[in-house]
Length: 267
Image 1 (cartoon, helix red, strand yellow):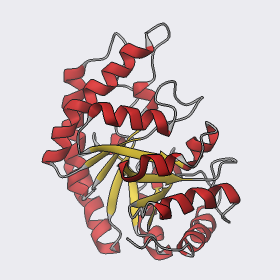
Image 2 (cartoon, helix red, strand yellow; image 1 turned 90 degrees about the vertical axis):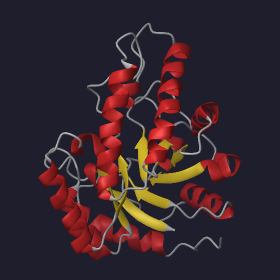
Image 3 (cartoon, helix red, strand yellow; image 1 turned 120 degrees about the vertical axis):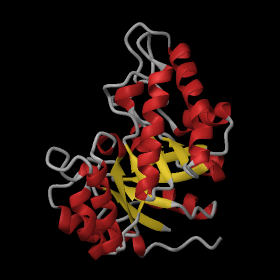
């Protein structure tokens, strides 16, 4: 398995994209970095070219981008503007492709959370219709958009992996797939067996401890069951640590050692 890191969570007030983590993560032995797409979109072309140069020099690819839509855009509710959201997404997908990313994470709870009083079924339809139109755009750029279910209290729609799987199946496009985040899975008290149910629908994984959303120092029983189920379906995609830390260098170094000791998928 490939182990990466969602670097935008390391020091979001100073480095909301995560670029300052490129060289340290490469040194620690991470396979890739995951950068914040919504923070990259407004940046000048020269800035992004400099990031690509740093990635190439460090030999650490950016295989995925998270934070697809900024909270300033409305994806649900009466103010949602499908045309404007698609225009933004086209630009964002092009930027992700420029970085060499193969996957974009569609969590974006700030953008997709349902406004008070707005019907959940209508909001679901808005999200589904957006994804139906994003599928061909992602396909054009050879990218996968991975639906990320986000637990309460961060989100109020598409909370569980089972719901994410339902949404993916309704969209029914090969470039719209599923992400499972272990932290959100445990927060919603969802069984790790959803991994076996979803199987090859899973194209990306996020990982953090269920207690405090931290870098793992050891593999506890719940996380081991989760990883074992991933091995059972021969999952070979990326596992990005998406976690908070007060001691980045120590925690990131320990976590990669911990995860790299896990048995590998055989597929």
